[in-house]
Image (cartoon, rainbow over all chains, first blue to last red; front, side, top):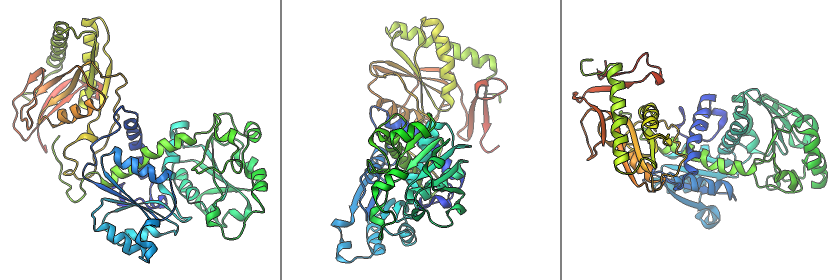
Length: 316
Length: 181
């Protein structure tokens, strides 16, 4: 359980304390990853099924490594080689996998709400690894973890999220988590990529990159989600890069020297980030990847560790 | 309270432990490669005190680490919610070292079992010694301490608490309490 939650689907539903519970535990999990033998027996005998209906390298491997470091068995299931291609529905697939008695189902799906639908039909815990343009809770948590590690706290800090906000599930999870931890969030991108009414989530909207990133403590650069966009929302990637991309010159002139740059990956080099910036000293992109494993270990441990059916205290 | 320990007795017991460890380390030729690891949470402050004493008698300060055994517990499937995990901090190589594992109270032996499992995941120590301030009996596993500050006979339903000033207690004490009171 994470606080009162059996699932990890949406950070909108999580309180500040529940978010901090995961982030604090992830600090201990990160220490485990630095040991000579990166394995602890805490989830021995538990199993985690990764159910991926959408392409992913980082997130899927990250959940897989997290499960294995905790000694859980991990099963990877991808839709391209499954009965989905034979017409099986999402709920039927999930129910069939549940009959194999996993403790956690990790789901990525192109439709927002898919993990919730599955959670309503299965008995085990469900973790969303990203659903449509809805949320990507583990990414939101690892971004917050990385910022806490680099900035000490999010309280009173300013974070700019730049790019295709409307199609970004990362942006939504980031906004929910970061505002709950006390940061002020600025959103920036082409007007066609900023959803109307997004300010209601507690963020401010900017259309000029300079205005968004100046004075910020951290900048999250997003990829244009070509796979989710039917009609073109921008005239071209060159113009996008010119107006909303970050290169070495803009970074040097506009960013505070202490500002850190995040990106959930995969990067489109030369579009939202120039290679010098992506690989530069302000970039914490590879820290994010390592922290992702620690945060996912914390999520899996809290959801699959222990036995919620028996609340009896055992003696030490 | 009659089986407990007052501040003076407790401090004397810690010094006695340190003297015994120092003598044994010198006899075994392990004075130079001794390292101390406290088991969270009760063993951590005790490990710090032992280190200060040992630094005096050995002439050098042994490295100090901390183990949190929550991830290695054998009752994870039995407990209610997943137990809270604290920091583990072992910054020196344990390979070839003589490790002094420190806990405040030795009871069922399950914590020590978990600590040994965790410790060997950091490398292969030359040997491991166990020092506890209080041995209260009631072992559920074949585990014994090499150094014991005091043995206390208590009933199974009693709780033995070691209170040290470092953890906010007004004064050092070992307190025996009937559980649930």
